[in-house]
Image (cartoon, rainbow, N blue to C red; front, top):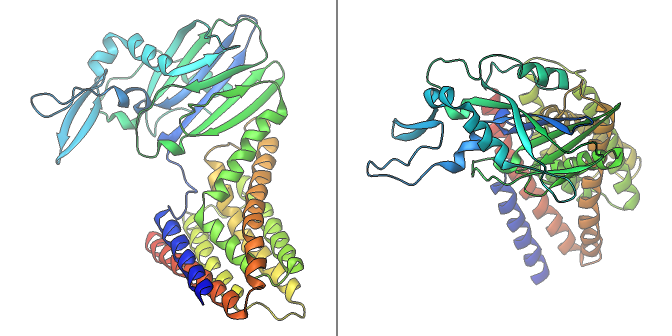
Length: 419
């Protein structure tokens, strides 16, 4: 009886942790994206960089003055609106000395070769209002976005958070094969831990795509290795499923509903097959394009967790049970695959170089993440099955009930969002 109580308490703790987590993190804000195009030449490296202006100036806000307002960061001014402190682009200061802002941006970016920082010079800088910025997905687009005459066209007052900064930086490195890229700045912005960093390295005929999440305080080693580039997308695939509580809950319910190892393999295989198909189809646009589609899929994913929880406590009859479970998890996997594709669209363009390498590497990462969950949970399931029957039945019911309650909360939230 004590063991059963302990399992129930642990289940409730898991519920509390998952409820506190964000329900779905499939969609990233544009302000959370940094794109780097790095072009090799005999002279060195040309870096074409796009990032939010907030990442440059947010940490430079000064202490509060006599009026209670903090000293504004360089190239900004502050204003109270409806009781909230707002930060605007100081267009006068920017037009007078745009090079100073470029120097601040370059100062936060660390590029090193064999541990040494090469000299850097700013070739061009442009600022764009969010929503009207030109494309930056390819090298040609990046070069074009920095070819305009105006550093920042004068206009109405603009929030700092609504401005994107484009830079062309030249590093005098000479011809080389590898380098490290990182950032030393910490803007302390909400959501900065989800920053999507994309590095596209152009070296001769080779183009390698690297992916990293967060502030990139840990250097990313960029080389001519296709394996090292693909490994960054593998890591992102693992992160996405491990840090996505809706996916974790479904896999958890799928595991506790398996009556033996053969049943587990049937469920895992079906889920893998389903989400692999729609991850690829969804990424390449073979899916409905209406505004209703994404919230509908998100709602269906939450409902799939409730259904999986029900399957866990009332598994299919043993005769043809594995085949039925395979079919069900394949169908549910189709839903989750679209969810994966929505997220991938935020970090990878269909016309990006080596898109298939990156896409398949991301999917491999998702599979590894799923396997990690299985390897962690299945031994505990086997242990509990070997205990007196009421312990296993009670613990399975507790986990399924907890998963259902959390999913019901998400259903309500997503119905409201859909409406």
